[in-house]
Length: 471
Image: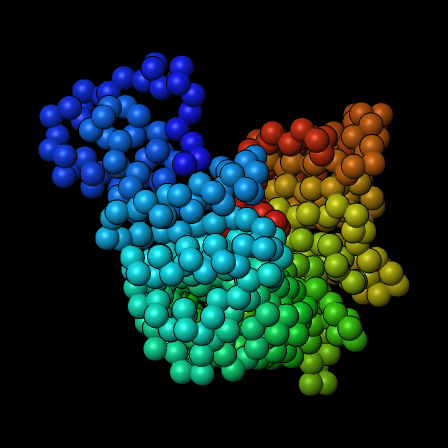
């Protein structure tokens, strides 16, 4: 059998822990069966009485910790461990491997897991060279977690299993509307759904009283998202603007990640569509949003009347704006959006390569309004501007924030990648005087950091890369 227990020298150095010495064998077997297989294999060399523990293990986890091993080694190891497994149950089977040419082994391993009432199945493949068959899927009666990456699904027309499924993650899985809705109809206990790069989905209708977390990422053909889930707490969406997007009854959402991007001829998000969406999440406390959201909500003509839309985030405490992909967003749009967040405590803006659009309309109509801006951000304590370039338009934003944030504790500039920190050093005395003149909070600290050495500790709760992860 392939070895994963370490060298003989390291085994001789290990001592049997006294805490285990007086425990009955049945209890020890149970304890070791709950360890990940790699850890159980290490423990098996502590003493002769532990040597059978890996044969009763319930957690067959072969993920990133085996990344440095060859595929042949991992294949032989898994095959040996499953062939010699004597326990009645396998709770978890996690596998990260290239499936090409391993059809026979995968079929065999999954059948063993099926016989031993698998509860958590996690298959992370490099390429979609393996398909879970309808017969296999229809016998997963104990399954509670299903995570598939680059793995094909052949769902049966009538699904009779997976009624206990609570977590579903599909990444790079080509699944069309009808089979997916069959899955949803059967899996009524789902609490988490994460769909990442599922190109076959065009329409998503979810009605649930259990769903708490929904993540939809880069599903390029998705045109309709209709969700009715009163239990939903966390909403993450990244991709093009769908034709229909509603979250009726989801008033308990407290965190939202809305990274909308223009696609095709949809060069901006229709204000009416967004206003309706925001009316469904009024109690959000944490919001990460792309620039298309303040753009769409700026003052404009609505049904023949010029004005701002009616919306409020009365509980919002952290706002993180991602300017990448913005079309015509400017300081006025950002500040008027902030006006609708009376409890805002922390503001973070990722500017990076984006420059505020300050054309004739800004100069003639919006900038004069900012000069008369009468709203105060009394709760705002921390502001972080990432990719700051000391452009005039950016300084207009900083001026209003410093003048109106009466209890500000820190304003943090993270320089752009093209050397603006050097520009700051040359002109530091000038800007220090200017910022000191602007700020309404005497205790506010002004900090400038290089983009490579951000140690401020003021970080967004959501990273933009969060949605690309499969956790």
